[in-house]
Length: 217
Image (tube, rainbow, N blue to C red):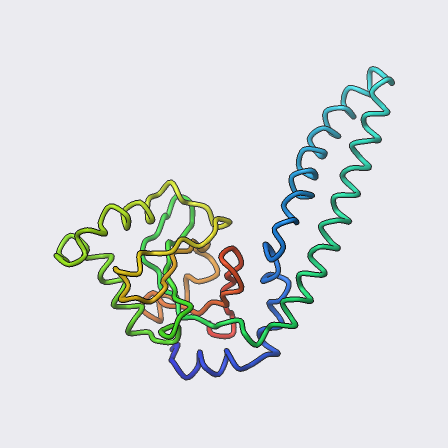
């Protein structure tokens, strides 16, 4: 079972957290998305011009240029991520371990809509259960009625994308604590959520990189 003491111990275990530095470094430097975009477009263009060059050699130059852009983009991404990973390692002590909870499941996409907090209640299973219950029962919570539209929007199926950034819930709804909605793939957490009433542990590196902490599974 996931307990408050377990989460506190894991948060102090720098060796365990360093194992997730590579995953946690993604999105640390926003500039990495520039070579990613160039890589995607260059790869498509490479395929297109390569196919044309089979029947018209004049397209060979375009094929080589696109190939060069693909290689340069890969090198740029590797260098940026290497720097980002080192920065994450240097600041690993400040990365919080948080209790998370499944709120809704999108079975067709294999995604769970989950919540977690990075604040003072990040190790408190009772708190995250209470917020989940407020979401489940928002139609019967008079004091939360003003937040219903925002909560419905945050958990709308149109957000079904595990690569999306965490979305903050209104702090008035969460007792002043900063709680986030984040989407996770079903497979990595299915077994542990069954044994822990829908709860599991995550490392909150940033809004995009929130890997599941396997040591707490």
